[in-house]
Amino acid sequence: MDKQKPLSRKIQVLFLSIGRFLTTISVLISTIFLSRILNIEQYASYRQTLLVFSFLAPLLSLGFDRSIYYNFEKNKNNHAAQILNIQYVTLSIAFIFTLFFIFGGAGFISLLFHNPNIEKGIIIYSIFSILNLPILLLQPVLVLKQKVKLLTIFNVLNKLLSVIVIVLVAYYYKNVNSILIAILFFGIITFVVVEILLIKNTSKLTEFKFNKKIINDYKSVGLPLLLASIMGIAGKNIDKFLISVMMTPADLAVYANGAIEIPLIGAITGAIMVVILVDFTKLLNQGKIKETFALWNKAVETTASILIPIMFILLLNADWLIVTMFGEAYAKSALPFKIYLLLIPMRTMIFSSLITASGKTKNITKGALVFILSNLILSLLLIKTIGFIGPAIATIISTYLSGVYLAYSIKRNQNISFYKVFAIPKIYKFLLIGATSYFISIITLKILNYNLIINIAIYNTLFIVIFAIGIFLIKKVYIYKSIIFIFIKKKGNQ
Image 1: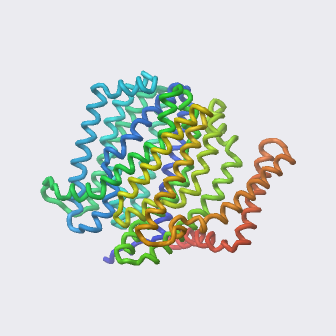
Image 2: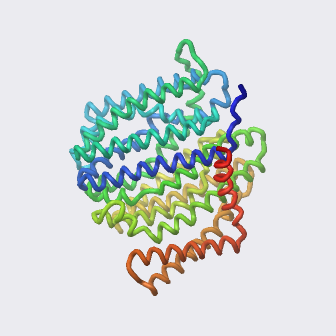
Image 3: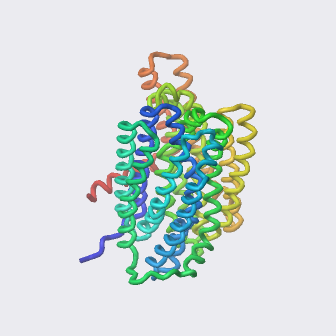
């Protein structure tokens, strides 16, 4: 029987994009339901508990999950031994952290966040964090084994089922700890499924033996990535952390529901870069610099063509969308939501993929350091001067500063033009057309102001028409045709 033909890069991106979009939409749905089922104090406790582990997750993984792309390609004969060894180390560290929380750590954090209600929840979720570690390994393994379809199905089903469990338990018990216990039991089932998938998709191993060399290989690539991940996530969540420490839990609940990145960002950019990371690695190893950055610029332009118009449409609709999703109690969440949308142009360029492919991961660490230090300083200054929205503005500025630094580091290492890396020339036309369409729509709304439904119909239709005309004038219609063709081709192959 012939082997199944590997999926093309575009089809892999399509699968991963759809999968990531559906999983992130599932998370958004659970956020919407929990915001409405729980009172604001309960919801704040839930968000603060998850906030603790958003900081902890990269530390527990040691960056080994992202190192798989490099080490599997380098050492092709011992994949099972690699997976078992890195699980042995990471699960042991996670167990130590759980003991820390049980014997006082959870109590300390509850005092720091001015919320004694989160102490038990942190202990419960720390156990779940142990069981959740193997999932981080599954994505790189299945991507490298050309099983993107299986990965997508697993991710979507896993997330949808977990959301159903969370919402049902929240509805019947209206208690945060009950929700976290349900997440823990669901995590046990998921852990078993993931281990089976990992075993089936790596070479057979008759006997496990701890191999220090494997761990050292992963440390050499993973530790710089670990430091970068810790600082990157700390930087992204420093705004929520400072609000938890300096303001009330209720303030965090309102801020956190707005300070989010839209699902399509992670779905599209993450999927594209995960697949292309393999190609970047191969091209750079072969010394094909020109081909690498041609692929990079094409990926950035395609991503921008989708995300930039979505950014402006969401800016137009932010106020009523937030109230519709979360309720009137969270109306103030619209302002940090609008500010966070300004991250989108930078999210079209995932510099860490290029740096990881070249193996020079220390630059990612330095870029993350720029991000977290600037974010911390600016957040502290702005939260005291302009209050609620200060940390959101600090996050935007810090993201762009770190992006410029990473682009310069790639420029130096690859001896290439800065604008071949920091690909603003590939996205500025989309920004100009989007901004023009946005402001014309806003001005029209000020002149022709009807009821909410009619207003929504008018300014969205107007935006789409003007943006489409702009795309036609700059001759970028072919990009959208190629995206549509992927869907048509895939449908025709089914």
